[in-house]
Image 1 (cartoon, helix red, strand yellow):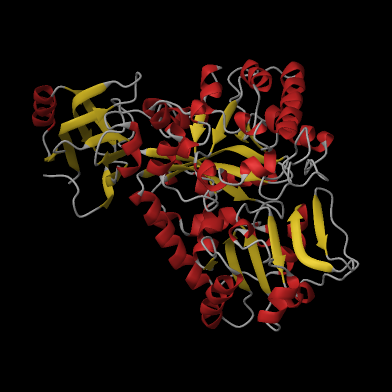
Image 2 (tube, rainbow, N blue to C red):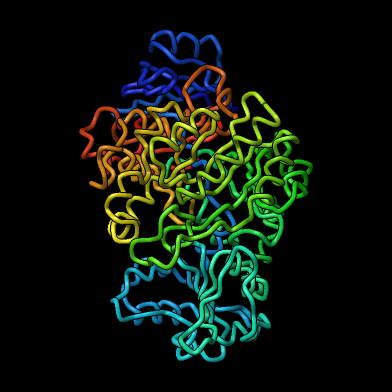
Length: 540
């Protein structure tokens, strides 16, 4: 028998109309059956019959389940199965973490490190091919930089991938070379596909166990729905080995309690059409495929985001577009005419402006109501560019925790004047642009509470662009549902919507803003069933 749940005894933030609240909420099966007064809720529960569990929140808060509108499931699993270098502050520490993983590898597996951040090292330290050769002369070794837009490999990996000294970078990528002109083992943007093409897949048992941990961690963070990036060919962060990402997701779907909005990465529409026609897109799987992803430029961390002015600490480069304009437009037009949503990665101001110009052309030539096309990241934009984005009706999917990762070095990279326009959340919202939040996991941790804190307080980084707590919560609830065309099903606590709920230790709208980061997720419900709870959660 299905159990219905009646929540009361704490703030219930419906997010349906600003910061609206209710006294009680009743679920029935996988849906919300009632939102309103406690006596009326009990009366409806009695008339419905069946098993009922009352949950006294004891002052804790009930909110719509969080939606992370942009993450990468397979890379999350892959990163969790390999050596995490995120907090390593020296080359000695990097080496130690790699050496811990090496004995666990099966024969033929490459040694992989992830989330490497060169800016954490002392200025004299540098990780490159020569250093990896000294540590691991026989085992092919590959390191992903933290932004996911560059890799570092040793000579054994170059040999395994058949990459010689005369290798040339493909369009949209660059190869690092040392003072003698030899490959230094660092591959940027589109060139990362060269070594990745030779990398064998990881051990399946380790990957599946890592996947179980990843999706349990999402639930523990209150995340009930995800915008999942899935590669369909060799283009994307996983290289050629990730071209069948949607098939892997199908295989592990029963480990993923979250509903999925699939965003397919690929050069053509073949990938998104294949996902749409696959069993994964069956309504019973709570998965929808209606969007494509295009990479237009790089990142601040790799100095590859396309900027209108040179980088302050690397004046020889403005970054670059990773695809020519005519190719971006070809993909945009094909997706638009087929009725798909376009999600385009653009971080630098010139990169964003180039994409906006192409959207202006697209929508002038092929007008379409309610297209909800998106810019992923939109990391730096002045008021003039923001106004152009707003006029087109574009959406933005942003990552507040990028501020936490970048705030200490961005002023050096961009110059203090340009940082005024970095992650301009308040300006986006003031212009009427729908702004959704995400983690871009595994690039950032899928910690929604921390992301809300950084959307509001920004870690002190240009706090004038901070938003209100209610606006920050909306980024991960109703706004995220809207940009995924799912506002009729989720994002707010309303009768008839899916019973995706999260119980928090306190209401984000009621605590002092500087205490937002102290809030904890207590319980998570997906489609009417609890999937995560800490030992202090809820009182029956």
